[in-house]
Amino acid sequence: MAAMEARAETIAAGRAGELVWLLEHPPLYTAGVSAKPADLLAPDRFPVFKSSRGGQFTYHGPGQRVAYVMLDLSARKKDVRAFVAALEAWVIGALGEFNVEGQVRKGRVGVWVEHGAPKREDKIAAIGVRLRRWVSFHGVSLNVEPDLEHFTGIVPCGVTDHGVTSLVGLGLPLSLAEADAALKTSFERVFGATEGAAPPI
Image (cartoon, rainbow, N blue to C red; front, side, top):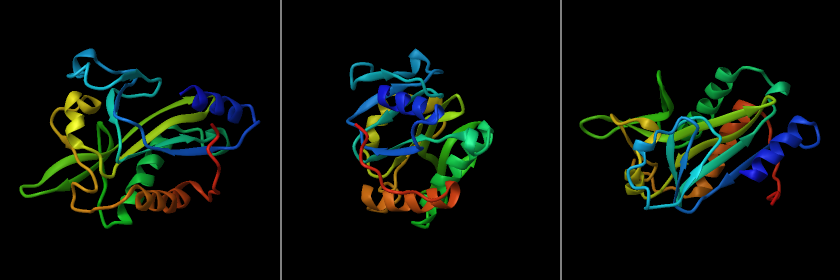
């Protein structure tokens, strides 16, 4: 988080370019600024980190692609809602590469899929961002093949009426590398061209 916030500051100051990190965390829970203590159901299960992002509790772990997005909205469009909608469109476009129909729901942040018989609606990607001086940080997490049982230690994003799923849970045995390729393709459609970068830390 320190490195991410420092990079956002240098972007805002005009001393560094925009950056997207694609990461895979060890099992952990993060608490956004709106997290409710009662939503942490198993406080001793995994490390818990306080986060400056928006939102409530979420889980990160192996098999989940976390994308931290440091973009300069002052050079793009100073519109927070439009930015969140663009992040949703990015993930939905990536899912579309695998013929998965991602959807958004009013009042529920993130990307959702309908599946199963009878049909149910589960979250496949979470979104939690923060802006400082019109530069974004934090970002999105896409469930590729995480252990979904790990989500039971929290109330994910404060939502109790729906569950979580993954690409593997939808019957698509995809790797993180395949998900990354789809994320890059969709990102360039939504936000513009990219170039490879070495890890900054």
